[in-house]
Length: 166
Image (cartoon, rainbow, N blue to C red; front, side, top):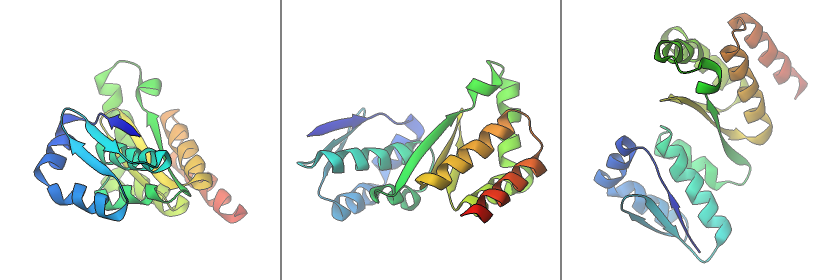
């Protein structure tokens, strides 16, 4: 089976210039990867192609390659929140929303990551989350609450409550 992934040009340049990333992925799992206009993934195992596609997509969304590798484990998933759904078309509003998610010196993003045991990247017009299924849902809900304008303290309490329930 063969599949393709398109990633932003900036991230594609990193893949093209750092061959070790692709070599490492090919050595970890039995896939062939070719880089052209898109990333081409080929393997006899369709499930493996799907997982590797998620790894490449996560890298394209701004994750470090090692963090993206968590997606090879079937307990982990990638979830992408489109900030534009909450900010409208205004570029200033988009920047403001990204700032609310990141927080001063990364505080808000770091707290959400810590309380949900996820990895979060704010890149372009999206917020991407990698983690186990149940905690990804909690992180997504917290991010959506921020994008809806809720106070940060409310979100932290929500996440602490969720954490106590598990």
